[in-house]
Length: 148
Image (cartoon, rainbow, N blue to C red; front, top):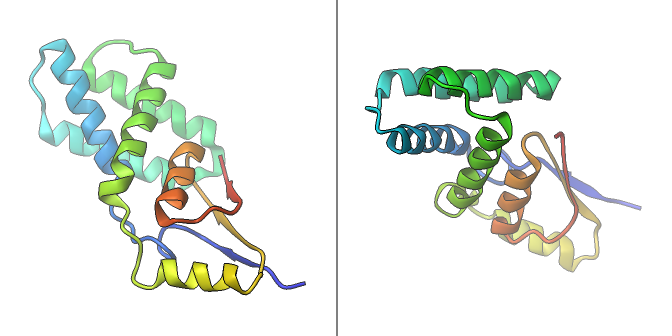
């Protein structure tokens, strides 16, 4: 039996910096909630760390911890890790519709493979909820297996 598996970012969707945009939005919201000024340069550095940490997910738990530490340092107080991670995911999922437009022909290729009865899946790295949302936004209804 033949089957096809795709990656998402760079194969079906362009890399639009979704995670970076979600990180920046999270930092902006946390700053606003605390009545503190938003430091764009410091935010850029935190988002850069976030992007690099999650690009090399050999140790996802350590990447998450580094991200949480950087966010806490940015806001200058301890924010529970579950809050940081949950809010980051929520923001990223919300941004998918505006940040993850499929590459030309991606939807057509997937539809054609499905119409031929060929089993198809997406194998990808990242945060499960975000990657699942990207796949659904693409119109893909098959299995999505995520490194997280």
